Length: 376
Picture 1 (spheres, helix red, strand yellow):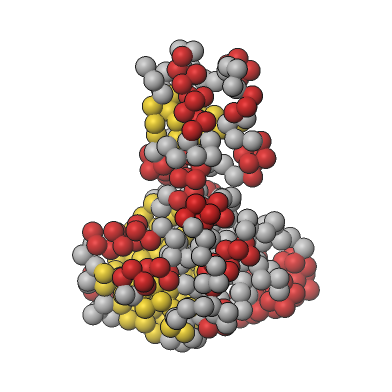
Picture 2: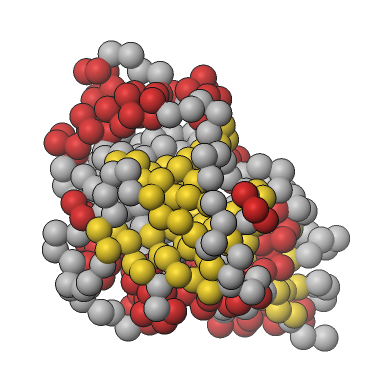
């Protein structure tokens, strides 16, 4: 018997279905502590690969004999080696994660969020390994993406399966934690790429300016995407009200937190914009709107179906970031609780501006690590 493989889609199903899984992570301790596969029913042992080259004796008493064991490393090679040793020692149901954490970082799980006007549909693409959330609106034979990530084939193929072609690609802002797929989608499909102009002052490519109160119609039905200028995470951050029912908040508002204003080094300048958006602009829209953010922090924010979202009125009741009445206290909370910067954030910003064009392997390296777009 040899070690079996488990692909990232199978792992994603275990996360969403809250199944049990034992993970032996053989990456370095710092890498594991910084970022791992999160699962409500998962158990973990982290022992670096180099500590196991001579055998698995150091961890034998920590491994289950009655449960699947998934061995995880960065790319899939070391996990296969360790998995083979486990099998040789008599362990059954041992799996190596195919493609390792790099593959986990790239997996997208499409989840239907809602039916829209005239047969339209709204889908959320959950990037479990990175905390990114992308969206697709389908109306007849047309589709629009919002905050698409760089794995653009997923969106093109999904639209094709639904009998639609992507005609619009929108970004709520210039992203700093992951590489946007919006421009590439436009190049591949002929779609219009929309970007807030205040975030696009340094971009090196053509785009359609996305201004406050712009309305984009998707398909021949009455599904409208209303742009709502909502600065704070960036100076150009723009939210979208879709079909008068859903508020796509970008990185301004999350289920359990609020966006950080410092990824362009302007925390003190932009914290006032962030407060105005959260405490004034969003107060002017219906509290019945269902908020769909561009990121989530932990799996606690996943709903039963695996989607992420909550009604705006509920967030005003429960989200601490929306309930700090004193402005100076709000400023302190935001500027003094900033998490570490996302890995390679400046390089990612420059990629999204079109200033640099890293190859595929470098892009994967740049995105390794957890989501860090929220105030902790």
